[in-house]
Length: 260
Image 1 (tube, helix red, strand yellow):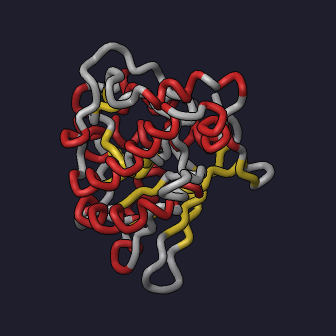
Image 2 (tube, rainbow, N blue to C red):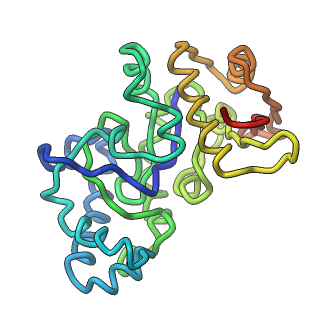
Image 3 (cartoon, helix red, strand yellow):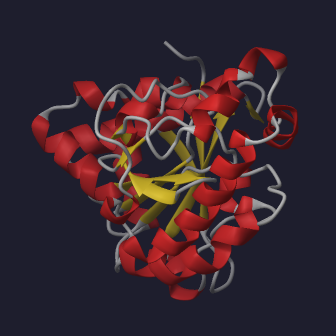
């Protein structure tokens, strides 16, 4: 099973660990594309601060993120699972998983990123600011930059198992499973049951809880149909829409009353 996650907008501090080594990151087929984004981002942020802040969409209060990006090559690096924070990652609670669940997380979780393309939670990265929705002066939109490299490496990473896609729309634009792989992919919406509407906090927190449940229980569904049954056995209310033609993913709606 491969689980696709969005990053968090906010991130923990890098700390004082050894700096980034691009060649040590998972999915080495992305190294050249990572270097291209990293190089432009560092150059942008080491130059005109106001231009960098405008490109990155940063408020005055986030001005310090520009200097952080300028120092990416020398900043300390930590496992990505410690860098990403926020509602989804709080609910997932990687640090509090038992040893077996942590090993499953290392194998199955893949976090998408405007800067790195995609990384595993064990990959050591510095804290950064580079969303998929910006437009860099040279490379343009990161989502477009990443499409070809991700299309090359992710089918192999997915293997012949289930792909559970929990990404937001901006990050889903960087890679879309195709063909037979799409038929093994399940996308998830979390709906507030009384209103049938997506509510951001419910959506993020429930997705984090779903991943934690699967990792903690050692559940390894082989396809979307098995995933639906597994989630129901774990206590989730799930409605499934099987694809009506080849090359489309399954759609799963998880209904929640409230967040406890």
